Length: 104
Image 1 (cartoon, rainbow, N blue to C red):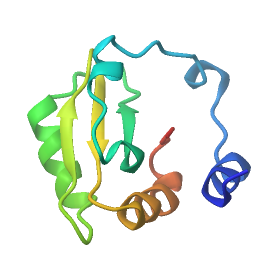
Image 2: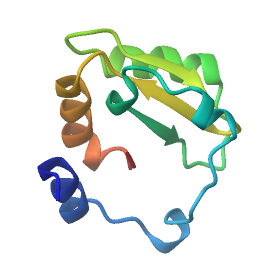
Image 3: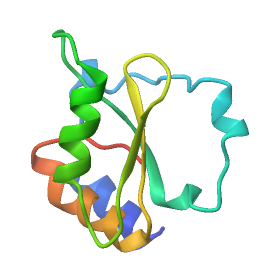
């Protein structure tokens, strides 16, 4: 198993209600890019309203790394987060596990 995936598997655990399986929109297959391995799909788990532009602006600054992070709306209540390199994605996924539940 990939060391990153092994680390995530060993440290990430979701409560039952957050562990549901979501079907990604059809455009997921059509949006394959050369940086697809440096991205993940994020979902904000809250009952409150999430203002997409504010979330994108705040998290783009928070997750800023060696290269700019690109966050875009992706289906309902989801976001596509793309990084310029594997190191930026790795840093975010390892640093943020206490604050955010990220599923690659």
